[in-house]
Amino acid sequence: MSQEVSYSQVQRIREIAIKSYTESVAQVLSEAMHKAPVQITAHVQKIMNVNNTVISPSSVNILQSPTSLKVLQKHFNQNIAVLNLDKTMKTDEIAKIKAAALVTLQQENLKIENKALVKQAIQELMTATTLEQTTEKLFATFAEIKNEHTKVFTNTLSSAIRLASSKIGFNQVKLETVTPTLTRIVATNPKGINLISEIHTDAHKKVDILSESEGITDDSCEKIMDDFNNELLTFGIVAERKERKPTGGIAQLPYAKKLQKQRRTPSKREFVNEQVITKDNKSKAVQYINN
Image 1 (tube, rainbow, N blue to C red):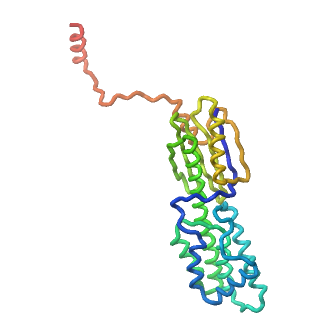
Image 2 (image 1 turned 90 degrees about the vertical axis):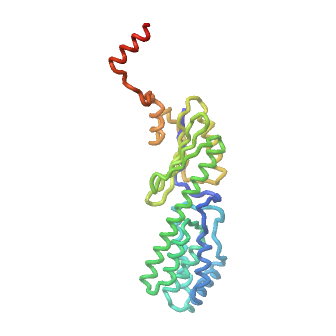
């Protein structure tokens, strides 16, 4: 009997070495820090001294869910507050915003795919000349990095699912980006059983995983899903809520329904290049056979 497993609001996953990783945001920022004016670097140093921290990402080797990136705004506000409390520092709001942004973006383990895109966004922030422009570029930079991190987070989940599927014997794996918010992984074992997983991302960047077995005719489903879930755990996947339920043999995911329908619909026999026998030829054939 088939089963469905859901991981609602995935919180984090351990990093996996995949090609989509280019660099961390912290590495990209190192160049910006190197070229920053003295006033900005002084502000950065002030924030570091007060917080007694070293500029290095927290939760190294752990990718946090895109929904947890709201902490960026919290950290930014804290870093600005540090500078505002120091009356000895010049009142340069633009420099404060830039310095707070540099420190904030290095406080989390943020990963990106498109280095050039993020590098450009950071450069535009650092070269902004007015308060309005600086604020606008700050939000644009944060948004760009969040989008990039979401892509890497989703790709990491996809890699974990593919590896977990292969380890339990589902070696034929197909991955498809159905829409920007839906990734589908279909893994098939030698018996023709399918393990279908879908990664959903909503408008708020909440990430869910839905997995379902399809094509099982015996009682092996429970063990398959047990093994699959155990393999996923090795990648450090943590979700806010996890549920598992039997489907009673009735497919739940749209793609599983499609596969199930194909199994139940008998294929039609087709004869390629079949010729129609004329009435005259048919009579001759009958006469030949009777003779």
